[in-house]
Length: 194
Image 1 (cartoon, rainbow, N blue to C red):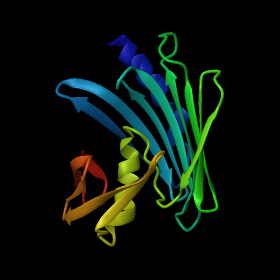
Image 2: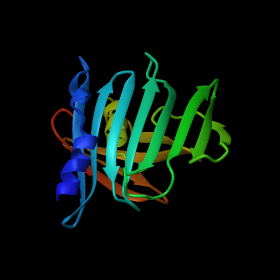
Image 3: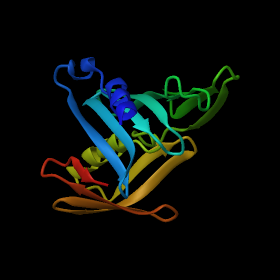
């Protein structure tokens, strides 16, 4: 228990709430009675900053920043997945993605290894950051006002599109290969359950 509290202190630094006019929140993910992730985010119209402690598949500390322009178009993102300090684990992995024209340049570096680079078409404006709940909330916030029938995330392999079925306090996202996700929302469109 002391380790969990110490890790929460790393996860939720005091400076996280210091930004003015930013929306912030947190998610706790459980599987049965087991907590598998704790996530804190700060969001503005042009930025989403995430700090997450996850245990899937191993304990990792994940920091991510997504940037958008004033029109809501993706500019790029960075995600750093690190082992928990003093616990060992796989080497740090840094993913940096930058929009260049109609393409997204993705560079991945693991530990001291050479960068792996690929280019994909930038045809969605919310990146898929694996197991990051605030990304889904950002996606839902973008589609909620117009009750969009499709919502798309941009993965490192390309665009992933879900069909969206809206009700007053929920949205059901369905992907042909990925199955169905039911997300419960509060009256402001923020996620309550995933």
